[in-house]
Image 1 (cartoon, helix red, strand yellow):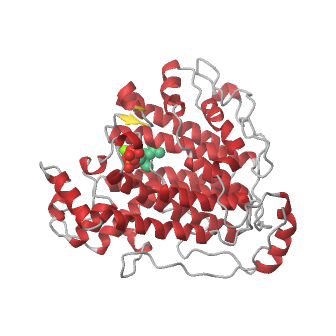
Image 2 (cartoon, rainbow, N blue to C red):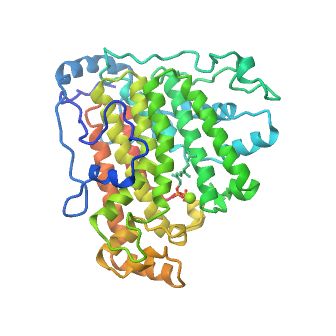
Image 3 (cartoon, rainbow, N blue to C red):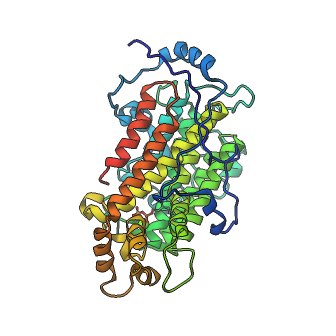
Length: 449
Ligand code: FPP
Ligand code: MG
């Protein structure tokens, strides 16, 4: 296939992407966050400032030559992201299960429980696509990220790491790390993909306890199957193993990013315990209401996607503007993803979702569709204040969401973020992986579960 010319323009620098340490400050109250999310009169974020990369034209000429080795997506034709990184994903579940081995048979069983059912693997898929898509983008000549080729090897003695464990932990045993034969994804990036799935699954184990869930991925939830205590402990175990795997990447910035994600998940979940910043039985809708919700949404959902996309670019030793673009893509896609999730809770049946539908209002949560209705009708304040706890509240809330087009407005906001995600990577060299990242934005908007 003939190489398409690569545009000579530079990459976008997000006005919001954090500095290279990329961490949200710890222990900062939520009301310190909203200023980072501003809205225009429609209630949407304004488009980002654009800057032209100085690397621009010279680099794109080089890319034209290098990129001949990678398949290009035909213009205008969408590609199947799963096909592009299918080989990589084939080993994902197997490698994750090895990371989760425990000498305690019950812990082994509970920890691996959610790896049995087929998850969507959205986060690892994005990390793998981002790794491929940035493989051709400009490098960072100054700060090479070390790519350990023996990421399964312990640094401490296996005797120390497995001292009181009845069986040798697979992590510390000299097991073979299964690699797909793809030279465009580094072993460290593949391990990063596995780590994102571990962190995500740990958060689901905990979330299902908090939400008292009965199903997950069309099966009985872990909390119902094994009880709350084992589900929480299994989640902790996953985090422990994810931390070891992360440490073995030997990249302090990536370690910092993914550790911050774990803290962010908890911060987001804490924010979700309340619907608004106002501690009031009858809160009023203000612009801060949306800011609070979006900040929570970033912490709970977009942080993992954005910071792992950023980490993938860092591990690939990408140039700073490429790293920022990867982060911006992940941040915007992550926000779109959760907005669609909140929308589907109103629109899709439980059978299709693989988990109970309409759960958010039942759990007392005021998500985007409800907030858009509340903006138009102050009556909803009292219902939000009592977390839809009175008989008839849930039905009334649904009625008002329908009347004020809460679902449609949520979709429009999600589309806005999805468009920004596509825009963020527009100057990546053309490749199938880039087309796959774009397709992930379309899939996010069209998904039914
Ligand atoms: C699903 O939300 C849950 C999350 C995206 C994050 C949950 C985070 C925690 C419980 C904090 C603890 C984190 C770790 C890493 C242990 P949802 O309830 O809206 O979605 P659902 O319908 O799929 O349950
Ligand atoms: Mg839940």
